[in-house]
Image (cartoon, rainbow, N blue to C red; front, top):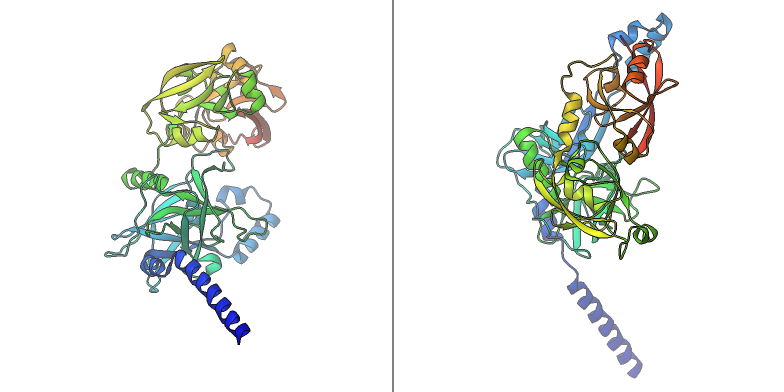
Length: 456
């Protein structure tokens, strides 16, 4: 009888412990019920690619017939993702990569209603896209205000992983402000890292706090298998708020631009630069006539504060600069030869440089380029012996098709080294047509080799 009493008492004790633990855990049921109607599944269709007329005309008959057979067999490419409604008149937010190259976009709600969507604007640098459907009175979600998220906080995701519609998964915020450069080396998003189970199909879906506000847009995962291993990354709501407003206003996003090549400062570099600790963004190169150059920022400087924000490592700098509007005058604190120096820089426009690439160019050469010479100081700053800098790229030109951009420094064409304008002009005038030619150029601190084909 005594043993039985002990057993009952022990069972009751552990049951109470379990109940107490459960009482401390959040209940997500109401959040899921309230938020799910505003979460959508996005299905896209990309039609089978077709070869252009000029491409087919240049092919021998046998290859042309084989190409036609393959095109007849080719099927449209279908993909899916998630998104959510941000205004009751039909604006929907998702990832750029969800709808990139899509010919058809269909949005599906949890009540099984479907709508065709059009793209209002898209921004590959933040991986965000704004869609619009023809509907009114839709359920909506609210984007959280900046600085409302803390590491360790509970978060919940709703999306369609692997096509399993409106699935919910929970976890905590693992880190804030993660720097994850794109395949182009760009780094303008301070990602939220979580351990929420995010899988293919969740992309573009919302990440909620316990108040039901959207604190992030699920964008990517780190995985060795293609599935979740507890490392997922979301775009902060603060980034989305700015991008959405710009896409609504103009259909494009403008970002601040500094015109520097940077790297982290380790212990040895900090010692050599007379810093008391490893910190800041070390300037390796400054783009000639760019905003940093005009402000007096030099290679070897270490930026430790920009626009009032501390720069702890190099990844912090593009986050801060990119969030500023072009034309803003920002304070900069740099360490130079062991002493703190304060400067002021007028932030340039990253996208205005891109627009010059896409704009009409007068006086371009056979490659579709306008180039300028570089001075000895500029070459020495980048560690180059020679080269010419691209200032403009004509659209639909050979250079544009090879992804040459304003600011690139051409070092070699074919087997000829390019040291100055005269050598460049001579080589370009002698280039053959229709033959792939090696072009080597310097971009943002690294040398890149590609081929370029002169068609006329």
